[in-house]
Image (cartoon, rainbow, N blue to C red; front, top):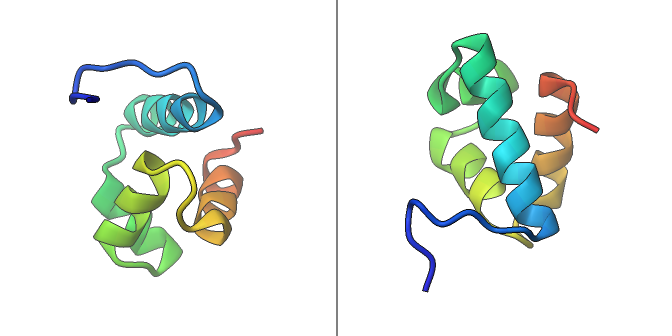
Length: 68
């Protein structure tokens, strides 16, 4: 079972880590990112933290945060 402190090495773990790092570097919250994307905060949170959910939202997050 994963915990809040678990670091994963899957592609999703890489995306989640990259997104969270990008947010921290920008001093931006998930709430602020959601507002800039015109989405609900929980939608953005789910896209960042869940491996197979919301691929279109993930793509928008990647573009906004300049992730590969």
